[in-house]
Length: 446
Image (cartoon, rainbow, N blue to C red):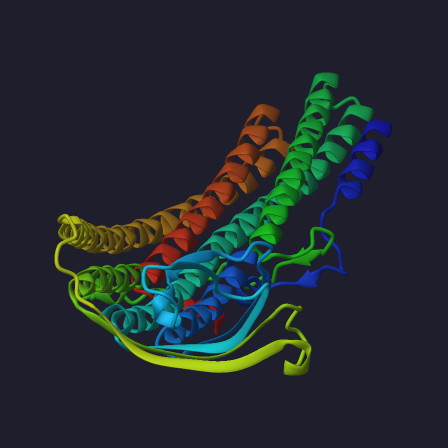
């Protein structure tokens, strides 16, 4: 009797349910993940960063203005020798002259404006496509988050269902144990029968502890996938595992799938990359201008005036720069051909991806059909196992069946119920894959 009390205390002590747990539907879990999981956050940041990439490329088409200045001290001024006749001296006479001052300072503004550069125009188009690429990538990342969360969510649910089954088994076995205990006390049952049923209860408690640990591990995995703090308690609505028939469309356009669209956008970016390289064959034209002040004298020019022996003057220039590429050693041609190879490779990736998406859809449909059949079969099997257990109990109480028959019937019912739960899990996982193959994972958030 003491052993039974200890087992019951253990049974209730390791209970994983709590009235204070936070209810969590699949929709809630997914929406929480999309707001808090780092993968989803980083995908949003990439979209934000693409706006700055566009601004960076656009800046190349805008005027570039800069201020410049310098201060130079010449300890030794360069000298040159010139014909004195240029200054009214005797012909043939050479004089030594110094040009420049000990100090000089320059300050001014310069402007450069690209008038024609094909690579800039191509870069702007590529930058906008990059933004679209990251927008599609964000959608794909969110779909991947949804898929992981849904799979983890149902894994937790299955373990919790197994816990319910083991709880029921423990309760029923405890009732049998009480009956055997009364029979043993009255000399109507053997000691071995009582020991066997106590061993059975101990094994059930051990299994329950293992399932409780598995639930905790799966819950932690789910919290990780949704970005939820580990200390948060969660539970699940009882209606989570409903089997709802899916619409199996025979005509499915996998080219609308996010994975395929992302590759198509990547193909467009590679095409722009090729055009950007080809732009190297085009001439470039730019305008530049500058306006400067220069001060020179024997003293430091900063803040000095002509009365101090420092003289200031201004100068400016405006020019056009034309660059026409003539021969680059076939380097540009090699880069263009490399870009063409990359485009051919991504076309192969597109064909392979489409084939893989078509296969995933067909496999998901088959798995759905198989899972529905398995659920039906396992449900009937569980019902039959319950009937067998009820009949075996009656026969055992009337002395027409052995304890072994009764324990075997209990084991068969537990196994049938767990098989039914596993079949439900297989269906829900197949349902996720079917929804994914149809490109409708976002519907789980609604």
